Image (cartoon, rainbow, N blue to C red):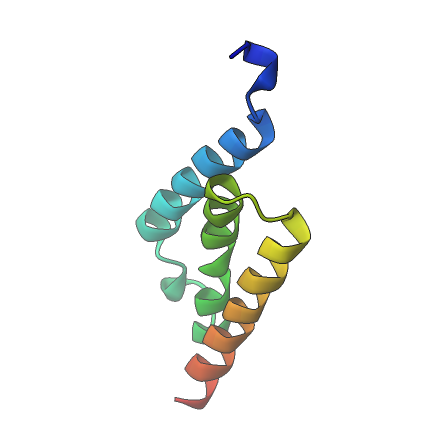
Length: 79
């Protein structure tokens, strides 16, 4: 396998997703933002990591992650 055959976009998305998950936990946005917004922001690292480890298109990953983020935000707002 040659270096050009690697899927660098997906590798980068995985590492950025892992890094942003660590940053999300370290910063704790619940201290600075309203709870529904902070809960919805948790979907961003999940979207990036999900795109990095699957063969799905970026649109499918964003749709799944955004749906989860909206669900988390609404659930946090209601409950």
